[in-house]
Amino acid sequence: MSYFKEIERVIYIIEEGLKNKISLERLAQEACCSLPHFYRVFYQIVGDTVINYARRRKLSCAALELISSNRAITYISLEYGYESQQTFNRAFTRMFGVSPNRYRKNNRCEGIVQKFDIVERRIHMSGVSYDNIRFVILEPMQIASFKVYKRDLGKTFEERDKVVAEAWNGLVSWQMKEQYRRLTGKQEVEHSVSDLGKWFVENNLHIPPNTRYFGFNNPWPAEKDGGFGYEAWALINKEFCASDDVHIKDFEGGLYAVASATLGKKCNLWETWQMMHRWLEKSEYTYGKHQWLEEHLTIPGKGGFHGIAVYMATKKK
Image 1 (cartoon, rainbow, N blue to C red):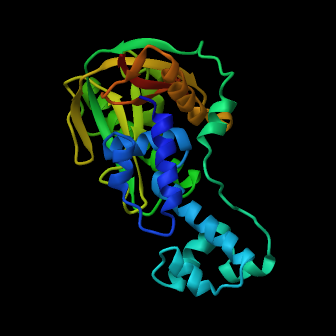
Image 2: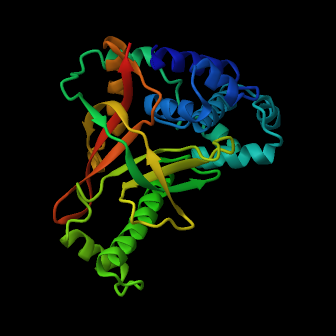
Image 3: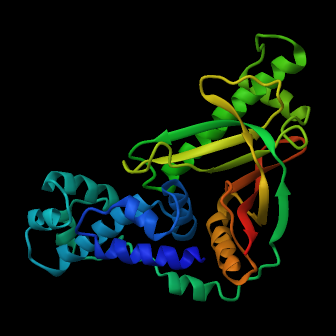
């Protein structure tokens, strides 16, 4: 099974249905996976959520019609499934920065999102090295989970980054307080968040074996409203107590193919996921059904994350 081929078929269906309502359930069925897993795979390969990709392609085609025809904006908006011209105007302006009328007057094809070309992407990656890939078995572990989901977000990488940051901030803040109470025996935390963070790092409580950090895109409860979700995990022990926002659960572990990626300005997380999918096409392994993960790596004596490892669930064919 190749998710490249499945996503290629999904993109074809999206392109054919830009003027109609797209069924997310049907797209997931075409990709031969569950709805949540489909969201994650699509994001890994295309670099965008399925809802946002379809929205941007729809508006891009509408923009091309604006400058290539004299048809009324109202007609174009209805043709692409918008309930009214006002709704179309708002969506168009948010994407292109100008109104449909101004875009037509400028007569310039700016900001157009082209159809994602799976074939071109695979050709571009044909010379990629797979030396970075290794195998590990994650043992069962107990983790603390913090989820964040924002409706009608995820249209830009900046918006999505804020969701991810909120998840990590919420989880680590809870973890530091729980660790402080556990080690000091005090029920009240006497430090500010900043001082607590220094104490946490100075005692190397942020690195293995004390803890590990994993995360993944999680379209929870669903992505049908165009939202974006993220779930952050921290490895803990049984002495930690859950809260209203943090849930304790058991992770079953499994076999993973792992590759390293970079963070920051030269982040290549998307390219690394694509490389992993490409590698799997040629290997003696196939996709596993256990949770796919991204491990956020820490180093002694310093706060924050300094690298990332991509964990693709695998099994022997």
